[in-house]
Image 1 (cartoon, rainbow, N blue to C red):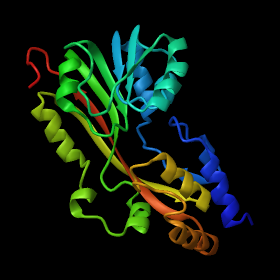
Image 2: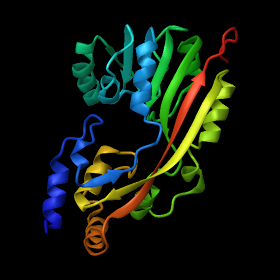
Image 3: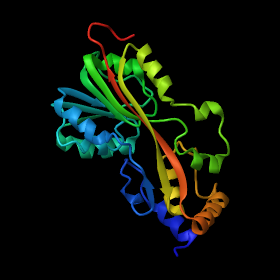
Image 4: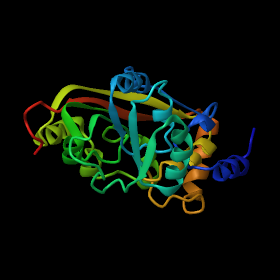
Length: 257
């Protein structure tokens, strides 16, 4: 068996930029939502005239679409991902704009007939409504409440109710409607994740930095070593992600609020 030290050293050396999760193959598994977001998004892009992908990460999901809209723009706030997305998307004719995730979108009103996003930190509904054309669509997959909290709480202990209840789809629906948008479809699923070795846990927490803020191997060494021993003795560490799919429409003839 590979030792704790070897597994952790390997995971600590892997680059964390972009949203390519291929390194986890054979190390972790995650059930996928039944709706197939990337495939469904690609179908929307093929019919759009002007499309915006918000918080594109490294551009991997957007670039997976066989056909982009004639005008395709993506935003991203983290500099390493901006560079990665630019290299991936510019050859496809898409423009990448560096924009902090909490800033207003740097585009004119009604600039796009399609806005997409996969796992935005927080949906800025008023801004989404503003940049959508009347009749336009916001199509996105969001992270839901208490996602992977089995792992979060293993390291941080029980989390307050306000943290566990953040990102609830019913609240996001209400916020979208308050911005003048119409929610055409909203689906939610809870999905099984298995971490097969401690290296997968380390790489996940280094990559998804908001799960355990300030995570380092040294800071959490006792808990990591204990979890390694648990996985070796009992099998994979099981957690659950939560995802919801939004299909949102901007009504014709009614301005966003």
